[in-house]
Amino acid sequence: MSNGESAERLDFIRQIVAEDCETGKWDGRVVTRFPPEPNGYLHIGHAKSICLNFGIAAEFGGRCHLRFDDTNPTKEEEEYVESIKNNVQWLGWDWGEHLYFGSDYFKQMYEWAVQLIKAGKAYVCDLTAEQTREYRGTLTEPGKESPYRNRGIEENLDLFERMRNGEFPDGSRTLRAKIDMAHPNLNMRDPVMYRILHALHHRTGDAWCIYPMYDWAHGLEDSIENITHSICTLEFENHRPLYDWFLDQLGIYHPQQIEFARLNLTYTVMSKRKLLRLVQDGHVNGWDDPRMPTISGMRRRGYSPAAIREFCRIIGVNKFNSTVDFQLLEHCLRQDLNKTSPRVMAVLRPLKVVITNYPDGQTEQMEAINNPENESAGTRKVPFSKELYIEQDDFMENPPKKFFRLAPGREVRLRYAYFITCTDVIKDREGNVIELRCTYDPATKGGDAPDGRKVKATLHWVSAAHVLDTEVRLYDHLFTQENPDQVEEGQDFTVHLNPNSLEVLTGCKVEPSLQNAEEMSRYQFERLGYFCVDPDSSSERMIFNRTVTLRDTWAKEQQKQKS
Ligand code: ATP
Ligand code: MG
Image (cartoon, rainbow, N blue to C red; front, top):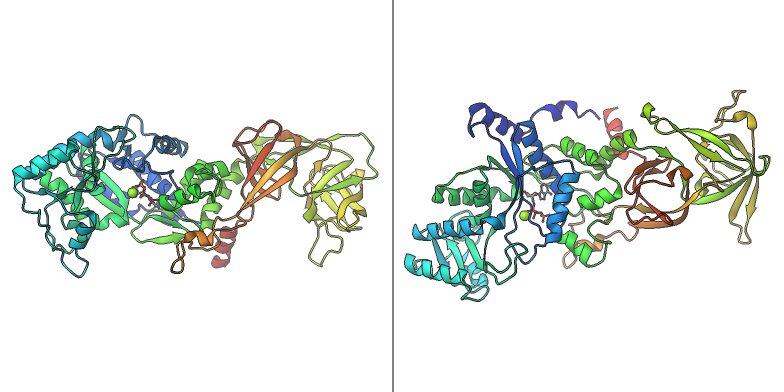
């Protein structure tokens, strides 16, 4: 594709950063952060944010913090922290010594809350969560002031301290900012800053029983870490006035919040809540199921970090929500795997072929090219013998006009080996083809006929005596609908789950060079797609995941549109 032109132009966020560097707005500093909440595994949408934040830091000589926004104890776990660190590193980014946890700032946040109370800018409210919602009003109606809004400062200080000391049950009180209940922006209608929650936190244990809300905590975290550009997704645009308000009231260091459109992908759900549902309800085999749009799942599926980074570069960033075609992601993947994956031969649905005129017991080592895209990858030897397997699909007893592969009486090429001609078709009692008898032409060794005669098809094959038996897992989209979030009333996204998203093939045959293939290593199985070794493989049972097929529908589409 020609992404050249548009991708080289700076996106609107990089323009802001470049300008700030020029004007010296932040004394030339560039400090960004990636701030996940450790309540699930990262997905491809997070990769966009990671590549943006770490990418900008790298390009402008700044730094990017990895900060866990761990302010909600009930949903957060250490497992998620570890997986997130792992994923960011795997994608190729390095936070150096800048690993932070929002929970490390709880004490400072508490002190700042006290400061706001003292300034008459925050109050303890006794309304229940439901009442608070009711009092809030709507887009068209102003809210109602809480009856607790005008409590005296001393009483507020006393109550807040007692909240912190655990004197009150969950949900009985909150600390709220005192802004404006008639504000046109609902986020500014006395938002809750703290709630009471007697819950164990994965890092602070039972040290706290009040926990800060996102809007209160996030700006403070940014401020403490001296972030320059606080980049977040568009849904926080109308939270920005509140972000600014808190920092201005406190009079502390004030980063700039900038919003960009989140990534949406066709055939994909991209919310941690929904992904958690898929895991918990057993629709997939865990967060790293190769069908999941999680970084861990994509990794296991065989995606390379380079492919994901390139995808993030090509989609760029802008201010408008849209949905990216999944085929573009696969296009980036194919581009990378094509360059980097060694070719091998494997047969997924084997059909036995006996070469009747080939000497019994003889084996020849055929020279095969490891990667036509990369000469330095060299060649390897593939054994050839009397009994082979080809793909069931590559034979038809009564071929239609456009079928050029093997058929009775027809000659085809076996890649890197010989021309063969089908002479007999052996069937079982039910009439299924179970074996082919063929003859070979010894003069065609290597795959070319000295007399210049042509064949219309080249098939891949493996030698029956030399193969490794393996399991192969083929995948399709997890959902049958482009937009799985679009559902009829009373339904949810799981109605669009694709019952055929996983197909397990056993008894697949791969060439012996794969004997010692390492976990997660990637190959192109000739004519079948890109595959990688699943981590559940053992020396007795190898398992391959098909990462993606060979057919680049996206590139074809682009071609068509151009011509
Ligand atoms: P989800 O909506 O999937 O639960 P989240 O926003 O709640 O995601 P966080 O852990 O808060 O998850 O996200 C960390 C960072 O990743 C945030 O800055 C968020 O804006 C960004 N992010 C999350 N989803 C996407 C997405 N689809 N595209 C781009 N950035 C995203
Ligand atoms: Mg979030």
